[in-house]
Length: 431
Image (cartoon, rainbow, N blue to C red; front, side, top):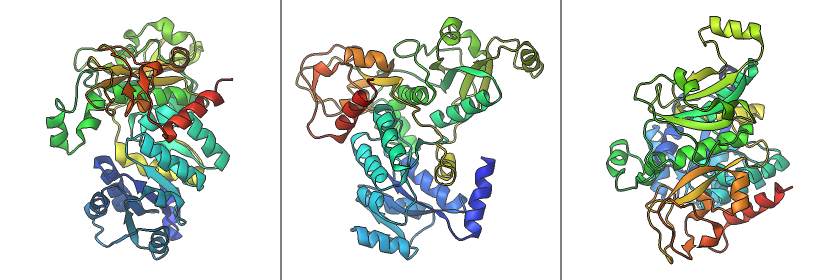
């Protein structure tokens, strides 16, 4: 983002860096820490929280910062920040409450825990940058309402595919082309993968097996496309999306041939994905133009004769681009990707195996459920169980493999903020 680097250089020259705190120091969080500390002048990572505090320390150490202060109270954290010391803590809520912090970067991938962190940060007037499509796709619209009222920015990130799609969507729309499909390029989709099948891959790359499973079983892409829909007003054409599989190496420029044109050209447009196309793991937008002369120019510029024109970004660089999102939020009040109103698309829990009454549902990327994207109107009408609320629920009855779960199928745990926010979201946007 060209304007961002100049703005950050100015903050650096003025010795007034954007002060960032991060919640979560896993594989991706450590990448974010490395990027801010080593490659982002004008921004300072003042504190890191992780339930295992040794991982918070590791995030700093891997970025060549050895001298850190352990903060066990709000006053200790604020003193460290005031004295220009790096701080670590196992209490994420301290970061949300502390003075001297402009923005919170949330990088856990959890739902209930993250809901508490994000809600508290908004209450204390901090911009929130979520690397967490799961939370956003479950209660993002109501959190956005709270953020707007508090005068802060709530956003998901540049670098992750939804943010990259949204940047491309804004570009396409900005040149006068109407986006009709926002797409994601995948290399694998198997809804029955689990942490055991993905253990080897996770070990190779130093990642969490459950997180890797959520990539493979389709839950992650369902969340990613759901939050794109919520940021654009688009829908899914069918439960689970079309998700065509093409021969490996097929160029994404052929994408106009893979989706029913009537679904794209009527209504608000759709979100979807493809398996096997290149460049992967990039993103693409299909758009239309109704001006004959402009269509002539697009053909001259090698985008073809239409009616669908394919625009794509060949990569997504995850943590490398997160500082751009922070700067956009803090300096320009610009969200990379955020809901524009109520939910358009949700992710619903679907049985990965035959489920039995009395079982407690495990988490996202587990052994028991996978997520499917579904239009929110259907989810509400049929009382389907949001994937982000499924963990910890007790089954009241048997549910066969591949059946979508309903709220009536489960007993929801007491006292969860995520359930409260979801109920509030349903009520707020029901009229």
